[in-house]
Length: 97
Image (tube, rainbow, N blue to C red; front, side, top):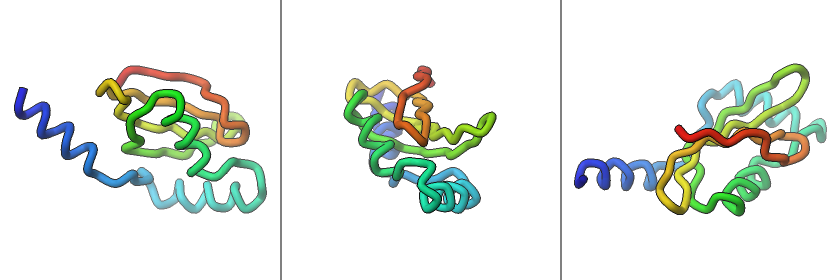
């Protein structure tokens, strides 16, 4: 129990980080073209819905659609992965991690 609590504290203390520098560059270019929402708005959508904290972010493109995949620790302590349409902010999928 104590180890699990300490591991959770480490995760909560860790800053949000992009999984790949290339993700950052592609997301910036798409944002500058006006085709995606800013990451701050995407993370606000997820935290407003689930509470908690975003601990990892990935930026992907699938069939011409830009997606953000957020790994989060919810307000209740669950770890989930949330897929959000980067252009609209619509939550597409939620999975327990």
